[in-house]
Length: 139
Image 1 (cartoon, rainbow, N blue to C red):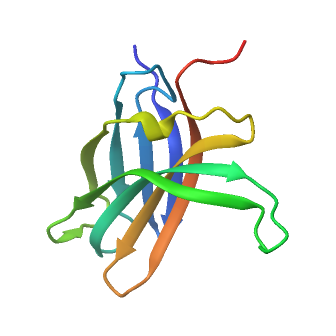
Image 2: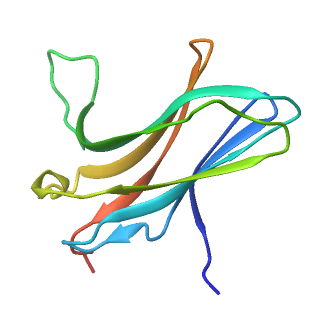
């Protein structure tokens, strides 16, 4: 039996969107694979698309900036939806993002996050994120 690792879970209204990855730690050369589950709530909900972004976040204090983190998008994928998610229905879409050398870093102040952004039909966007690792684990 294979356990699912919930990476992100977004609820809006009575609908829920879960991003599930197969493995939260990837070795060099492996691909980030997973499935997005859209669970319909009490009513029909129109989804334009779901966007997945892999972001390298580096903690870096600079006197000329109000922000202590620098974010760089190092991978992304858009998943289109035709129509809406019906009440009580579950829709699944698989995804695959291939890492490249930008996913590697040499600073202990850096991390990778996967951000799921759900673009809803009326211009409302909701998002959630969680961390993944890539490359050698320090031990």
